[in-house]
Image 1 (tube, helix red, strand yellow):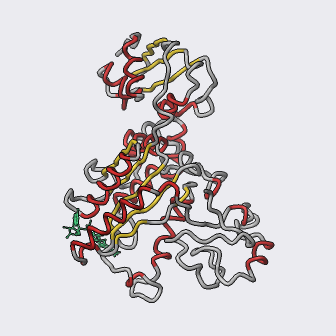
Image 2: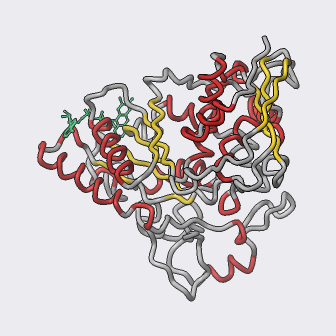
Image 3: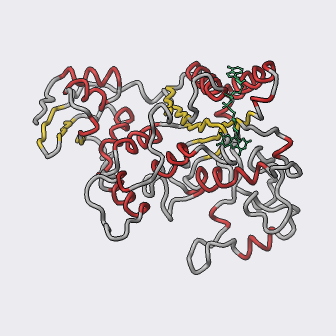
Length: 382
Ligand SMILES: Cc1cc2nc3c(=O)[nH]c(=O)nc-3n(C[C@H](O)[C@H](O)[C@H](O)COP(=O)(O)OP(=O)(O)OC[C@H]3O[C@@H](n4cnc5c(N)ncnc54)[C@H](O)[C@@H]3O)c2cc1C
């Protein structure tokens, strides 16, 4: 079915909303989930190195040099009817650059929960700071948690032996990931800050949030062997965990019944967030809200509000930078001998995970570490 987009009004809508896909949807009455959209203009080729990501790259529209952002937009509804519009050469994109976006990936089933209250404080406080706050309410969205071949549109590369990572990487490159994944990836691209808000489940995130990580943070989009950790794709973005526990703080001490919380947080903070390049802010932990008096819960929420006011100015947690390692299969991706040697005189391991058989650096995963200018420095990129 052809769509006729040649109408100045379309661009007026875009200029108001800066949300091209929504504008297209409203204008054409066609669900943009089934639209492939491509932008051409006479300015710098700001999407050309990632031609498969047209719909995502549309979000770059506001950052295009407005003087040069003339040209045309064309859109198609499969199976391939193209329609073209000319952009208004006098149109100026101005919003955008100033407003920052925060994404809250939220997992709790109940609107009256403590986690909902924590989320609401973040939405309110960040909005007051001028952020555009986007919430992915995973249970409300009925977000699919399991990573299956339904996440790929079209033919599989290897139907005989389905390999989720390989297939989703190809699907990402070819714009064939399922709509729900693409929608979340677009939110990640837009966000400067991502907060994961959840109740701790089995020392980790609830399954629905793990599913978000498994499916949204696809290879190519979120990481590659060349782009990981401090060289990772999202190295300009910040991310943090904000969660509540059933256990008390003392239960998660190194001498408490659950063991050291720093160890519990290592897989999520290092293995997922930092692996994708995020600068990881110290986690916000609400210890055992169900087992404390109402006044303490109120104080926790107020403490969170106060922290949010200065959140983006905080230093991030420290991790071992890639430069410390021999990043080759031959070298086993292991610490360089020189670094190992330098570390010998240090009283603590480098990080919670890279402990080198020594005492763990205290609170490495929950507090920003003081920097010692004379030592081989773990990385904190702000
Ligand atoms: C499958 C599973 C696995 C788990 N694994 C772990 C684990 O490994 N480790 C662990 O420590 N815990 C674990 N837990 C416990 C879980 O982490 C806690 O139950 C959860 O963090 C509590 O958060 P909540 O938002 O559900 O609290 P809620 O029960 O919703 O709230 C706690 C209290 O806060 C009150 N409240 C709500 N809103 C406000 C407000 N605005 N102001 C003040 N008070 C308010 C509520 O009324 C309630 O009294 C697990 C639970 C499950 C179900």
